Image (cartoon, rainbow, N blue to C red):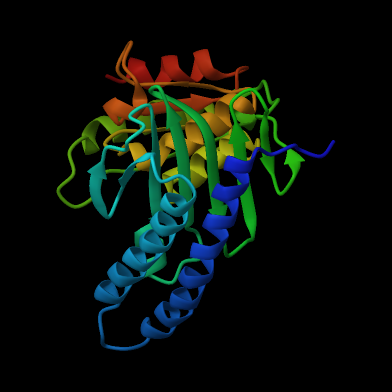
Length: 265
């Protein structure tokens, strides 16, 4: 079965690939900087900004009336207030900064407060995860389904662990403590968009995290849902995109997984 992508989704895919060419070139420079005494931090910030500039120019040229929210720039309300792009030009910045090849570009389209299209592109692996509302989730034109595993002891999960001055470390460690005896492992991969893409692809069975921004998770939420998974906020009855906390899993384990995580609080 070959997916039938809309013109808007094709625009998003082509835009992500164009920005990726810039980031891949910059990533080669960052890998070289690891062995030098110069800090690559400023260089990566410029790479991030360059990628967002490419994405914004491409999307605004094709859809000039849409709104915009991105990690590196101020929110803009479009002439069409019902639609806006939600963009992270470089998800996994710390990985990129350290020369770790696990980062992605995330582009989502929101219509009337609902995500209707999403692209997460991992340029290093050339893996392009895409989803449109009602049209399924796909990886390089192959249909995605969440994991079918039913035994928790065979399952692999992911989270983000608060670092530096971020709050919530003690509660996250308690959640990990409660989960680990009941599963096969936990990953802290450092890129929320890819964690959600991996849940959609069945590579991970579930993922949870707090303190996120809309651009970290917007595209990934749609991917998981269109792949047959479930997504909620860790705070009851709230929207994860607005609230910044999320739990996502295959439909077979969601209730069990969420009860373990929420029991910790």
